[in-house]
Length: 295
Image (tube, rainbow, N blue to C red; front, top):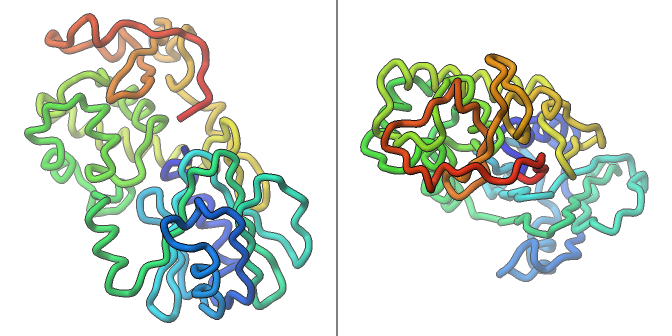
């Protein structure tokens, strides 16, 4: 699933092409994209809207229109956008929607697994919808060790699960949580509420460093992710632990292990990230070690 760096990269690349443009034609070919709303009705509502801004909130892309309404797009597992001059889009069996802009260019949405969503929200509904689902933006200057500590305080869940909760930190996912925990030298099964002040400070730095590394490399392409011009990210070549079970930790040489944490496959270094004494042996048993491409 595209995470904060991938979604932000899409936003950065797509923004110059769409902001200020009016939607002249909208074709939504997959009814799953807008359900439970009728895709024909959503498409008709979108025609004529002019894009005032393209923002990212967590893993959502937010197309804000001059009318005050907003189109929320969640890429889920395999969603992506392509932008090309008029009639310049190649044939694509996974194309789910096409938008013709008033400069004659086309923006297409493709989604292999069809889990992505488009939601058109009225002005009064947009911010409450986002506020109810998303926590702090970890690259915002208001994200501090103190605010992170407050969000983890009292959480019995493993720190991995707490960080995957979008109401804790918006935009974090399996890849960058694993990478941040390795940088912070924190075991993914540590109860979030047990982290000490110095660990919180390390984790705060590690979260930002991991996300900034992903942004600098246009995200990670493991399967279907690509930028709107079709280029691939390169962060997958820089992973410290994610997907590297059995390979040596670059810091200490210990083979990376894979366990289940927060209901997800999780990669960590057993030497650099020692388990808490209370972690049960059953919950931290290594899983199969082959490299995984799913998020």
